[in-house]
Amino acid sequence: MKSIDHLGEVRGKTVLVRTDMNVPLDGSTITDDGRIRAAIPTIQRLVDDGARVLIVAHLGRPKGQRDPALSLRPVAERLGELMSTTVRFAGDTVDEEARRTAGALGDGEIGMLENVRFHRAETCDDDDERDEFASRLAALANLFVSDGFGVVHRTQASVVDITRHLPSVAGDLVRSEVAVLHQLTSQPERPYTVVLGGSKVSDKLGVIERLITRADTILIGGGMAFTFLAARGYEVGTSMVERDQVGTVEEYVRRAAEKGTRFVLPDDVVIAPRLAADAPAGLVSADRIPNDQMGLDIGADTAQTFADHIRDSRTVFWNGPMGVFELPAFAEGTRRIAEALTQMHGLSVVGGGDSAAAVRTLGYDDTQFGHISTGGGASLEYLEGRTLPGLAVLEDT
Ligand code: ADP
Ligand code: MG
Image (cartoon, rainbow, N blue to C red):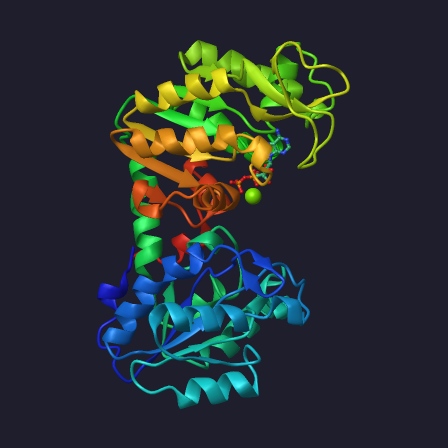
């Protein structure tokens, strides 16, 4: 993959950097700035080399329309604070303000364009429309650095089409993400344990199928566990369950058994009558969920079993919270898993937007893990073995 080392002299040149700064917001307050921090090393390196850095990024899903609630302005401010510098903000993406901002950048200065998804062409299916938009972005710069790992699985103008218009390389974040994921898919040190949770099993079928042939043990928690428990014939009350996936899950469990891969399901579950912070929580065996209650976290015994598996592993990949960690009453399972990952010896990788946010809100620091991926969908698609279009265009030819 072509990297920044292949860019040549950048001093005096305008370098367009695609980053993933899609941070969670509460109003205009950034609740987790992990993705902004993750983008800094590449930006800093370019700044130090005298480049004029112009950042292109997206925030949320504005559906091709200007939405003031999804302006990147607060993100530009936060980036400036974190880097102790000024980030010039352009109130549009490819129009007059963008041109003015790009033109005013001095060597080692930073500018940021408004949310690229305010333009429908960024994400549209029409190749020509995307390409035309990409050429307008390209006109603002001399070189392109692709560093938004969270979007490299998307065929979008600022990720894929742009590379036809500017000399293009991978940034350091994309490179380090790919290096870790490559390690997981090539020669993971064993035992290799995968922990999966989160809301829907249907989001993650592809990766589960693939991991059956790769991992030694797959621990299943979160909402998706109830589809597995239903496949085992248990009553799951009002828990999140995808009835139409029960057959697929049965098939996976059968294939895993053939391969000698272990699926470990919860044997106890934290339940409540409804999903609310003040709902009275209880603890039951996984085969005893009352029909008017829902499972909202793994139980203490399950957390112990999962933590033991993790601590005995040399490689762990974790995607998806074990429960509704946003509510303190249902966060303990997720906390125990995060803790076990910090205690294991070997490579621990956390992937998934909510999972990364969970470890940080639970008070863990990025440095306690081998790697926290900034890309949920991208990391899962990579592990599935799919070709990611945003990476394919950066390959040396
Ligand atoms: P990630 O972003 O890490 O890939 P997901 O988006 O798949 O994770 O899932 C995260 C969501 O799953 C969280 O908002 C969490 O509240 C929810 N969740 C976890 N366990 C349950 C459960 N038992 N019932 C309902 N939702 C759950
Ligand atoms: Mg998510």
